[in-house]
Image 1 (tube, rainbow over the protein chains, first blue to last red):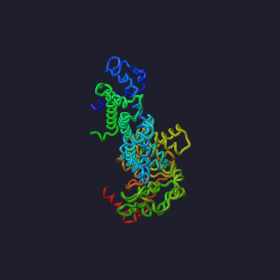
Image 2: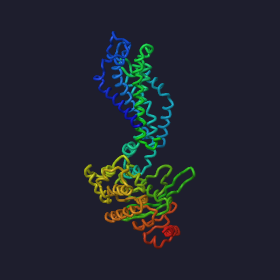
Image 3: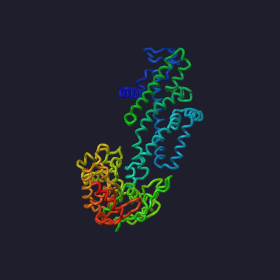
Image 4: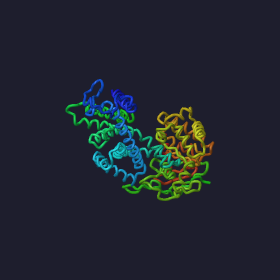
Length: 268
Length: 261
């Protein structure tokens, strides 16, 4: 049952990825094309997810929006993983004052309500896609840093690390060759869950109007667009909402399945 | 000339319950081509002596005094870079637990090849041949299969042989064997000891052999030091010590073995 669920989730993510890559082939309309003759039309054969108040095709906008939402998810998590793995490994391996300083910095970062921190930073900078990726990445590495640190703390006591030291290995060699490869399992799980989280944050920011700026479509700002006409045109919010829901859910299911696979001891 | 001279080595641990004198004034010499045994009950400071020689003592432990001369160079005074170079290819160690002496994410072969590559000016293909050659020397039945195997796919005995192959691959001047057969069952232990015995004598290796097992020590070593509570109580040629012990502790250690058998 669990495996079927994970397989279904992977299939869904694969479909979304393919549609993001081949957006021009899959989209039925130009996502930015305004059509005054078909404003706020419900789902039909011509516009399968309906149109918005400017007559733009929602399906095409969702397909193009997946490019933005997914790339923000991946790149933000990529940044978080890089920072988290690097700082976590350094803290765990060197210990002492460096560990103390880095972990207190992690505590400090965790104390900020992330969404307000992001709001503040985006308000100061301009809300470009790049800025959003970087800001989400810079505010979501702490969990990974703690994970990697904990792993490294136990791994560095193992004999093969001592053997490598005896053979004259440099610290960098030990960290990158022996410690990080062995700590990567939980990071992979955390990163997969993190992609879902980053997509949610992007959607929230765009919904609040400080995320991806129109006319570039992202799932969050399509949702925001539909808010004004929620009472008369349900399809404007339901469809992008469903895509956000299923994508984030799929990432969470895949993350859980990976955890079971990589850490069988935690399996209930 | 001595390969290793340890003089008045003191390694203390500073814990919240006071100072633990794990190694307390240990001195011994290992000549070239000599197999030197370090025997004693668990907790007597054998392994910590070895770790001190390798400078692998970490907080709250500290080497507080003594000199360790390796080929005439004082390891305790040397800076890190020099230390890395001398101990790198010249000293190696085989640990007690074969399960944790290899990195689980790389194959056995990759790890031995890597060890050879780091310290010898040879290409990858040559290093690979060398790794294979040493696996054969450690009398591993199917070296090709073992070369491509991951640590979890091999038995403890095979892993320990591979560990010995890795320790040998850079032809070090000193090999520290820390209870190399303790984790193995009796039949495998005998095979591994045979193999070690042959390699040690054929290649005239200098060995520091740590064991709690007097039988293994008497079989493998030329000289032996008996340790108790961080000090060496008696040292000399294996035959003398085992046949006519002078110290009370050595006598009781020998008697405990007799009592068991």
